Length: 446
Ligand code: FUL
Image (cartoon, rainbow, N blue to C red):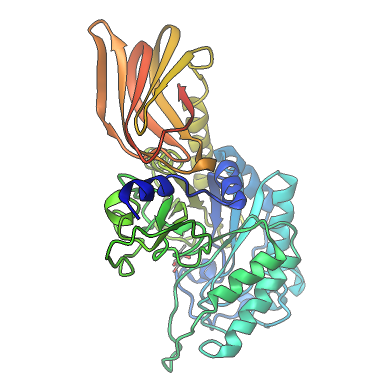
C-alpha cells in the first residue's frame, strides 16, 4: 500500500464504543491496593499469610469514595486479589479469602462493600485480579486457568456493572520452578460474554500500560499503535504498510510507540490508549513510614496524563484499620481543589472560533471579546473519528502581532492540556502536521 493510503487509514483507526466511553467518562480514577500486605508491610506477599491477619476493623468504604470524589475521580479499581492470592470476597473456590478473616466473623466481603459504596456515590467500580497467585495449589498447571476463570466469573456476575478489569502481567514461578501460562484470550472472552461493556487493561490490551510506575509520560502519546504491541486487542482496523519490518520486539516501555516512523513498519494498527498508573506514595500498599507525594508532583502528573492523551490511575492504599490515611485524604482534596480551580473559568465560552482547514494542516483562530490572562489551553480531537494531529504550534496576539508561544506541541488525541501564561485577546493553534484533515472537537482557554 502506498504511504498516502497508509497514512489516511492510520488517521481513521477508531476507538470501540467501550473505549470511547471509558476515555470520556473515566479519565481519572482510583486504584486501591489492599491485601495481607497491608498488615505485613510487604509489597509482594508470599501467599502463606494467615487470613486472620486481615482485619480492617474500622473499614468505611463511603469515606474512601468521598475522598476519591474530592479529587475529581470518577471510578475505583480494587485489588480483589493481589499476588499473595488472598481474595477480598467470599470465594467459593478457595479458603484463602474473607471466609477466614475475623472481619465480620468471616462473613465480610470488601468487594461488596466497596462496589455498593461506589454506586451510592456515583463512582464506577472495577477490579484487579492478579493472575500471578502465590497461594493457589493449582498455579503452574492447566487447572489454574479454570480456577482463575471461576474467580473472574464470581467477580463479573455478583457485583453489578464493572467498568474496568485490570490484568497485571506479572508471572512468577512456584518454589519448584513452575510458571503459569495464562489463558488471557480465555479471560478476555469471559469478560466479553459476562460484561460486554467492560474495558480491560493489559500490557497488550484495550487500555495499555504506559511503561512505568512513576508517572512519566511520553513526549508524544498515540492511541493508535502497532497491533504487534497490543495483540490482545482484536479490533485491528488497518493493514500494515507492507514495508519490510519487525516491531514484535518492541515493548510498551519504549519511549516511542505510535509515531509514523514506527507504525510505518507495522502489520496493522489498533486503537489502544495508554494509562498512567502510579501510587500517591512510594509503595502500592500502605506503609506507615511513607508520605504522600507532593501536590505539585501529583498535579503535574495529572496535567501530563489526563492532559497528555492517557488516563490516570492513582493508587491510594488503605491502612490496616481500613481507613485512608488523613494525609492522603488531605492530598486528594488539595489535588481536586487545584484541578477545579485551574479549570474553573473558561475564558473561551464567549469567544469566536474560526478555522481554516487544509489537507493535513489546519489553523484555528480564537478571538476573545477582550484581553484576558490565559493559564491553560485545553485541546481535544474528535477522537471518535480517530487520532490525527502530529504536531501544532500556539500563537498569541500581542502588541508586536502574532507571536509563537513556547515549543512545538505534539499529539492531542483525547485531551491535551498546555500550561501557558500570557494575556491576549487572540490565540491561534496552527496544526503543522496531521495524518488527515484535523478534526478538533474543542479548544478551551482558562
Ligand atoms: C505490578 C505489581 O507487581 C505491583 O504489586 C502493583 O500491583 C502494580 C500496579 O502492578 O505489576
